[in-house]
Image (cartoon, rainbow, N blue to C red; front, side, top):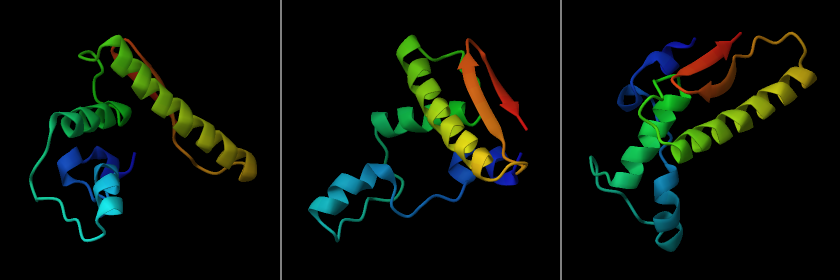
Length: 106
């Protein structure tokens, strides 16, 4: 597993244009979010992102678990397509999370 994935979410390198800034930036290209501010939706998104990266899913409700699994299915489809184009390439596959566990296959 890469060292970047092992880091806590706040310690990782993030793209300068996060998804939560796309709408305001489209409305006003000069938009700059306040540093250190957050909201409930952003916190939930970070929490679900952490579960996608392997954190425990024990605290998620059914809808949140479905959302995480949809993301993982999407990533899995991309990886499988990559593997078809480049057989034998060392790509990490992340499979569905069920109940309290997730699986990582190499």
